[in-house]
Amino acid sequence: MKYIVAVSRIFVGVLFIISGFIKLNDPLGFSYKLQEYFSADVLNIPFLEPYALIISILVVVFEVVLGVFLLIGYKSKFTVYSLLAMIVFFTFLTFYSAYFDKVKDCGCFGDALKLTPWESFTKDIILLFFILILVAGIKHIKPLFGRPVITTAIALLSFLASLSFAYYVLMHLPAIDFRAYKVGANIQEGMTVPDDAPKPVQEFTWTFKVDGAEQIFVTDGSYPTVDGEYVGVESKVIDPGYEPPVVDFSIETEDEDLTTYFLEKDKLIMIIMYNLATAEPDGVAKLKTFSDEALKKGYTVIGLSASGGEEKARFKAKHKLNFDFYLCDEKALKTVVRASPGIVKLEKGTVVQKVHWNDVEAIKL
Image (tube, rainbow, N blue to C red; front, side, top):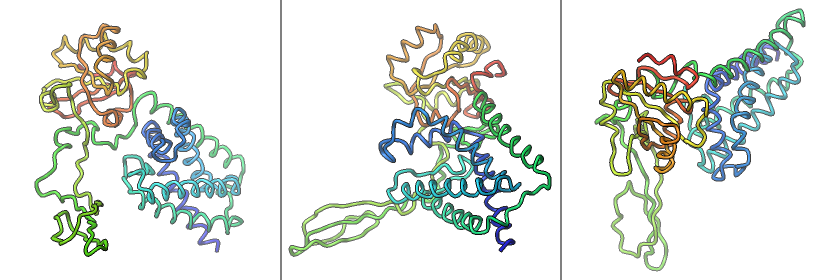
């Protein structure tokens, strides 16, 4: 039994550390996922949405720390039963999302590895199995080091290191960027669907009344040849086919789409604030000086926001900015850069540099 417990201990501990670290690298991104879960369309607990970032940090720090605690054998009962409580909660969450088709990606591994809700649920069931082994064999979980002071010191250091790392990435940007807008990526190429890419596969279920009784006909989209009265049709995606890494990104006015026009510029600065009303005041205060300097050096400077036209005009006048704002989807902007404001420098659609507003001075003009 102790060998099975040892294998389970390593597997669970390492997986929790990896999963937690990936989310700890991007706690703001995980908070967006939590907001999605908290929304009225999923768990219907919207009162928690304002606290999503705090909850995000607490959850991912706890996840990493529990993984470390398990590996070093620190407070085994507390650690194992905390792991059990956490995995039971996550298993419920992923099952709910999968069964009711509420959330398309659980966010378990951030943007590093996308899992469907059913894949996430399967992963949690496997983890639950191994954690139950740990519960049954908890007496075999011994401290890794003979001296308790060493174990306690490592446990404390793991907690402080996790908190410090979370603070750092929030004040700057994720240390590792797994998204389609990372430095070196070309946004236009990311939006392109190859000619030979797999096409979406849908299943259509048609209902007709034939000779007074309802009958079901299933097709791939073609209208059934049926001698009867049409009642209704339902569709289901069997295979989504190829999905480009960049979706919903655009640079628009109320009248036209200027995405291609701007992404072909040699020197482009995008200043991103997904919601002007919630942009950080300290960051906004830096924009005037920075944008003026960028314009002097030949850069095209634009703002991107999902806020309305009137709000954009008021914001520009209030802060005496000499660049215009364009429209882009809020979710896409949150994905481009984890800061508001965030600054992205591009050359012909390729991301050359992007920074948090705290590091605006680091942009090389």
